[in-house]
Length: 463
Ligand code: ASP
Image (tube, rainbow, N blue to C red; front, side, top):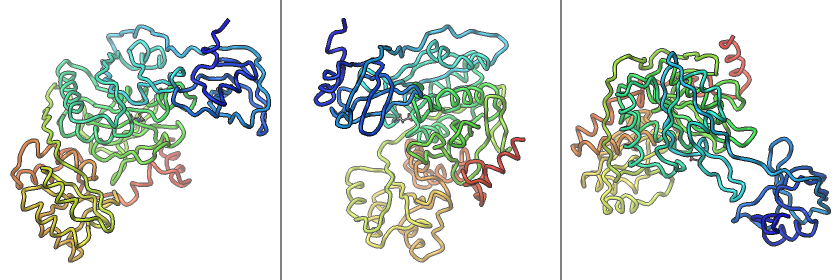
């Protein structure tokens, strides 16, 4: 006999009343009749914080749906099927002939599964679990996993960046053939950029990977992204910080993006990462890596890398909007901010009332850089009189550096110097493609678009 509170786990109010009324419960395999149709599935436990007006059902397809209690006319228990969400632990096999890869876990959806008791997405990460759920990894390499943190990526910051950079440095010294970093997708591009500055001239690939859908969902991208990322780290030739995620919305291939030119561009698509201002470095699938360009840093056999973990926290991005008030700038100066990256309109503009405040800030020693909200294209402050005026106030144009990249680079540069000329030198000397001499006219479509002619193009080169 199942205790009645177990049978209604997480359900409250109307939803709980409905379970009791029809004598069904959590893990019941039910047939539901409702005014919107009939449904068959398993009743899942609900989150303690969920609303009290829906029953959550796992359908045979694997998808979860919520059914409003007020449309339900009958529920009939056909059986009970308690799900087991524990991933089997298996010992990762070692093979001396295979490359050695270390996977650092930082958290995010890739390291998560849904806890049906609380409804929360919780971290699940160990070498055994990983091998248990993605056994293909053992065909590629010997994998060591190390959980460094268990955070969603909005909680990443300098403490984690520095630790990661140091651990990567150690992995290089210890002779690993590649590093993979499991990371939440939301701020993966920030981490990819800062690691590109903190770990320079790595002899091995440093591959960041995440997933948009957790591994318990049928549409999860976790396994394929992981296989591709491990392959890029073990067999790939690109010794840079790169991001490995879905290319198109389907699972045809992944893309390898340079860490300083990549951005999360969609809140829910699996094909969310896009190279901005350039074409991606490579396409990847479990069988092969197709390099799309040659100008990447190649894998080497030495163990040299430069680790520089400087980071000044008093830096911000200011996303300009019409009618922004200049007092924002004054407030930043007053609060001791040392650097401001402006994401300006068009070629790099802000409104006139901001000018005196920018001048005051620059005179107070704040380092101010201009980037563009359009993401594609360059800051060009010579085109309009206004641009020239803004530069005259002490604002430095940052070419085609992405705003987030300019932000982390300024944090990194100001961690090393306060001299405006030295900071400018650090900011404007490209370390790994964060500024480029020109942008390809079609990069924003080719290899990573969804329109038919782009798909045709890809089909041709994949042949
Ligand atoms: N919120 C999650 C994170 O960035 C999303 C993800 O992992 O994709 O940590």
